[in-house]
Structures are given as C-alpha cells and as structure tokens.
Length: 125
Image 1 (cartoon, rainbow, N blue to C red):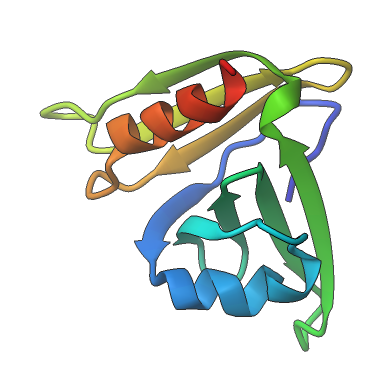
Image 2 (image 1 turned 120 degrees about the vertical axis):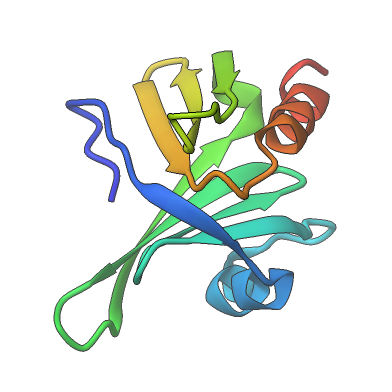
C-alpha cells in the first residue's frame, strides 16, 4: 500500500471501528485503542491513540497482509484538505521524520477535520 519511494494516494471510506479492531487487534499494545477506521476495497487505514496502521491486503486470497505502523510521534508536518463543491474528496498529508511523505485520500463523507484534530492531539504533545 505505501511505497516509501514516492507519494502514495489511496481513496478511503469510513468503516466501523469493530472492523478496524478485527483487522489489527492482534497488533495493538496495552492501552492502545482503535479510534477510527477507513477502508478501500481490500486495504484499510486504522487510526489508534498511538499511531496510524496501514494494512495492505496482498495476493488473490487476501491471507497475506502487510502492516505499516506510522507513529504519531514521528510526524514532523501534517496537512488536511477539506472537500469542496467540485472536488468531493479530502486529503491527509503527513511527513514523517526519516521516512518522508505519505498521503491518504478520503471520500467526501469522511470528517477530515476530526482526523486532523486527532493527529494534532497526539503529534503535538
């Protein structure tokens, strides 16, 4: 899902928190909880109170998965762009120390301001 050698964009739609917990529950540390979850067709992005977890479902069967952990503490800059009248999608751009730029694109029904507030709450501590 995330190619760290170039900008990556995936279009995400909000899904149930339980769906996110099911996808990454085994990876969560003590005290870590899923706050929101977003899904593309097979891939998903989970926001916890500690990090963003990007899940790339691979191969035809979907049994192979790549989990990429993006800790809020490594975010050096982030930007949110809200949906408009003609541009119905919103974007989240994050720059990570030692990693570079990652972009997620959300459907117009996603609350990008809430996502931005969530990231600010953890990244600016």
